[in-house]
Image (cartoon, rainbow, N blue to C red; front, side, top):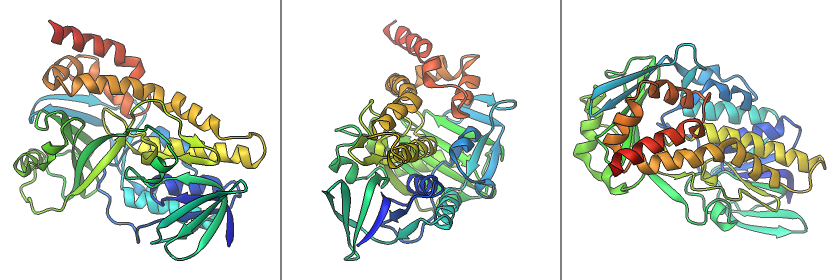
Length: 377
């Protein structure tokens, strides 16, 4: 039976970045990934450059665009543009490249990966984890990291995160060309998707397009509506494949660790409940998970509880306000657009949230008060 300091279930963004953070500290790491080699990942790909501090490597190869403007529209009109000039840069990264960079670097530092392999059984034994897999092999580790994404069964098994996860339903695709999207802008489109929004994020020679809803998930089954949104981004060729995904969004401050086990990224229900951003919480949680395990392995701490506390302080506190904004905004989207997005100071504030310079907590009380007062009137 092979033994490791840490076994990570899931080799995507969260799993690979956690593996890299731990292997750079000299620990033995095994990643168990159920999928074969990575496919195209048409997620939005937006990432604040401030996330560099959570990435222990150079990711220039994965950066496709550097964004100067954030555009907001209501049904293809009523434009609002936020200028990012002078702010912390906002990047569009190609996810499959970023994931590969992280994984390759982790392997270079000694991490191991099994793929495609399923975890079939996990047993706690004498302060160790015994992992039985579909390849008929058994592995042993001191710590366990759950990084198997929004459809994680192991987060539920270990009772990590909310007991009743809340999901956003999304579809995503990648189209060749830029349509009518400027190469240095991202666009958010409201109004077409009731209780949700659409987005277009440009890569070098293509665009990641997505639609998401937080309330009525059946809305994304309307093919005519989806095509209308895609045409609004300047595309006429509608012969494309879409990726359907349910995202576990932040749904309250819950424990993200147990005894020698931690959940990170989408498995931990950390996705932004207002804009469905997942890259930033994945990188933040991976960094702090590695820090917490390092403290235990080096005998500076006796448990992993500081991880849950840190994630609530660094991410959850802002997301609590983001959830409250989302609950009101997506029930009254037209009012939200007029009183939230179109206010004189709003574009800059939203841009600052995207670039990591401001939290939802900084603006939430004023926004919520305006929305409630308007709708009660």
